Length: 257
Image (cartoon, rainbow, N blue to C red; front, side, top):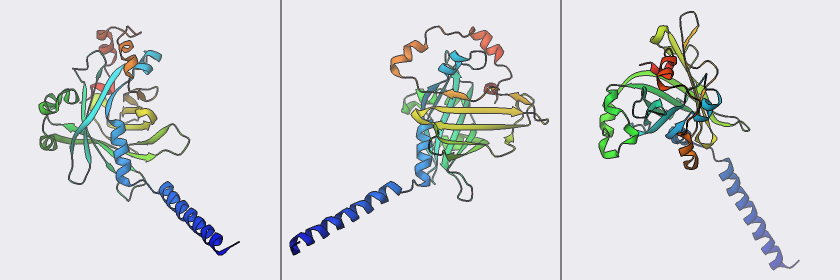
C-alpha cells in the first residue's frame, strides 16, 4: 500500500473514531434535572378526559375533564400551572381548582421531579382560567400572590425502560394532613404516560387507616381526546342523570376544598 493510501486510511479511521465518539456522547448525554421538570410540566398541560374509563366502568368512575395550563414562573425557574377539574357536561363549573408547582427534586432525594399542589386564595377569580384569553386572566405577578396553603407534594421518578409510563411517583409515606369528610390524612399517586396520558389517584384515610374518600378501584385515567372523536364524546353514554351523579359523588375526593 502506498504512502498516500495509508494516509487516506488513517484519516478515514480518525474520522470514524471522532464521529463515533460524538455520536456516543449524544446518545449518552444525560437529561438534566430541569429537562425532566419541563417534560412533566408539558405532559400535565392540556385538556384531558376520563371518558374511556367512565364508559368502561360507569359504576366506579365519572367522565371528568381536567385542564391545566401555565400560570407563572418562580424566580428559580419552577413552573406554576393552574389546574381544574369538572364534570364533562359542565366544564364551566369546576369543583376542584389548584396550583401545581413543578420543579426538579431536591438533590438529596432519590427522585427526578417534584410536583406540589397549592390551594388558591380566591378560586372564583381563577374559574375557567385556561379557557379564557390571556388578557382576561390574572397576571403572572398576581398569581404569585394568590398561591395559598401547601396541600401535597408528589416525588416522581423516571420509569424503567419497557414500562408504559415515563414518570411515576407518590406522596411520601404517611401522606399529608387532610380533614375533609372525616379524613386525617391523604395520599396521592401520579403517573405520566406516553401520548400525554395522565393517571391520578387521590385518597383520604381516617385515623384508623380506613379510606373515606377517593376512587377505590384504581387511579383515574385521563387522556387527550382526538379532534376526530370529540363529537362522539358528547353522544349519550351509559351515565346516570347529572343529579344522580352528583348525589353518588358525595364522599368522593372531588368535592374536597
